[in-house]
Amino acid sequence: MNKNESMSRYGPLVGAIDEGTSSARFLVFAADTAEVLTYHQVSISQTCPKEGWVEQDALEILRAVRECLKQTVFNLKQLTIDPADIVAIGITNQRETTVVWDSVTGEPLYNAIVWMDMRAASIVDDILKDIHNKNKNYLKPLCGLPISPYFSALKLKWLLENVPQVQEALTAKRLMFGTIDSWLIWNLTGGANGGVHSTDVTNASRTMLMNIATLKWDPTLLSFFKIPPEILPQIRSSSEIYGYIQDELLQGVPISGCLGDQQSALVGQMCLQQGQAKSTYGTGCFLLYNTGTAIVDSSHGLLTTVAYQLGAHASPVYALEGSVAIAGAVVQWLKDNLGILTNIKNCETIVEQISADNRIVFVPAFAGLYAPYWRKDARSVICGISEDTTNAHIVKAALQAVCFQTRDILEAMKEDTGLVLSKLLVDGAMINNDLLMQMQADICGIPVDH
Image 1 (cartoon, rainbow, N blue to C red):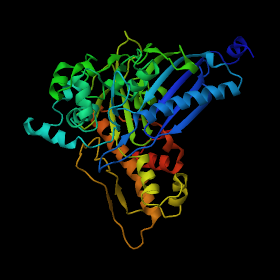
Image 2: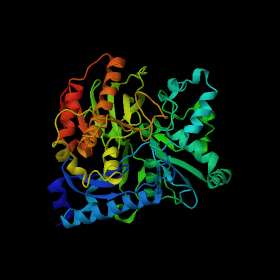
Image 3: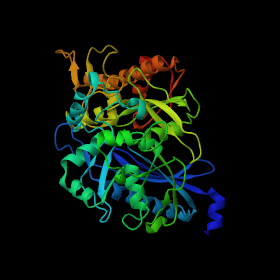
Image 4: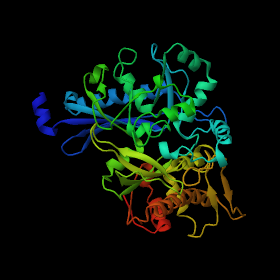
């Protein structure tokens, strides 16, 4: 089949790299119909060297992405579709996860510090000591975020203060910093041989270093955290050509879109109008509410973040966000750590075995509590256990915990905006659990649409 026949069959194709906390995927869509033609997915491991520390191998992430590209191209050929019909590739990625690397060798100087990592908690304590009333919202007018170990600036500060290789690379002017999008873009566009060092506004808005109004690295924030500006990527919009892939299989294809994973879910759910919201149930749970071009400052524990900017000259669109650290991760924990579940898909069946009444309460605060509480010192607790408690009761309490945390965020959004959602759009791996989605609808009192 020649290229013209392929193009007439599906039209131009668009690729999407989806690099999440637990896996990487590469999907190819027919641009005209949004039909997924093929994809490949590779799991990514995590290590927890100390309590509260969560790391990933940045090279493993890169290898996983490249394996996904390679296998998906192979799949296209098996389907007699020409990979040359891919006209653009976009990237969506786990946010806040922090990578530092050597600009000359391209080697990471430390493992990637994952978004849920809490090692910078002591740095936060030291910072708050010098702020009146230990106000964690001290920098919010500039960056929209509370001072928390969640965000990249604190992780980067820890690396600069604690890792000799990072300090040496900084002295030698070879240090580069980025979130996962920057790490992938730099490597795929050539790496040490001319790779593009850039990020987009949505990822930059999660670092605590970008001014939420100007969309530029803020000198006051950089000075506050003692971050050297020369190691930072260039901030671009979410929709423009960042560079061209240099890997052989897709050489010359432009990387022309970039969004943090939760913002990409907002766009993917077509929440493009002010007042629309979506909730994503993955490793964590993240609810974003489109506030249009208005920067809404939450007084109820939510984040102000950039939702998207579709072009270098387009106006940015903002969102309020409620972040829950532990959602799908608690089900994985029940399987891997407690052995309560042999298969995550079985949790629906297990819970259906017990009565509707459940007096077990589970607060899964493995990484503290995020919105709307922002309690980094919180720890998990299971209450109400009696001699009648079974595995099924604990599994149900874990699922309910996800729903109650989502309701907390919806209540905070109602307080901030004065609006009540008429329905909640949802996505993510956990939405395949019909029982969980029904629980969510019942607990929040609104329809859940997926």
